[in-house]
Image 1 (tube, one colour):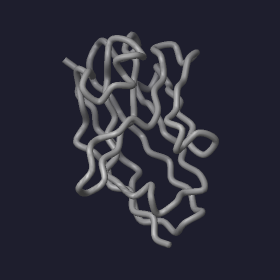
Image 2 (cartoon, rainbow, N blue to C red):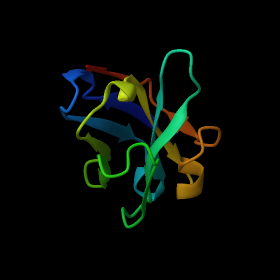
Image 3 (tube, one colour):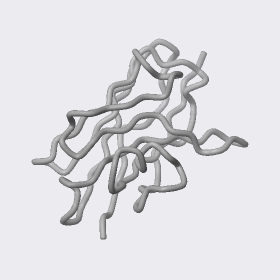
Image 4 (cartoon, rainbow, N blue to C red):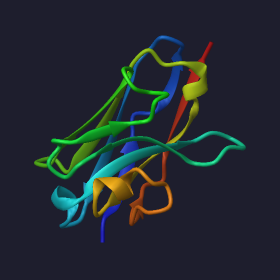
Length: 124
């Protein structure tokens, strides 16, 4: 069993930055791939970024490539999402998720565990 708790969301102006954190409890964190997803009102949950268990492999949605960076610290059981040059269209509830492999961590239907989400609002 893995419990995930996101933090770091908030209100920021366009062009600003936020750093999301996802703290995990459970014995499998260091072997899990991790993903970040987001869901805006009236829209489906979409993939944002994923990282392999070692951190050696990362993947990003085209919409955030070059602006967002995913990283993890297995000694702290935490995964991060650094978000720079934020845009109003980045406004959403952001979730982290744990999955067996990075492919599963990129598909909103497949992760085994989910956090409750943290709200990111970008004003224009």
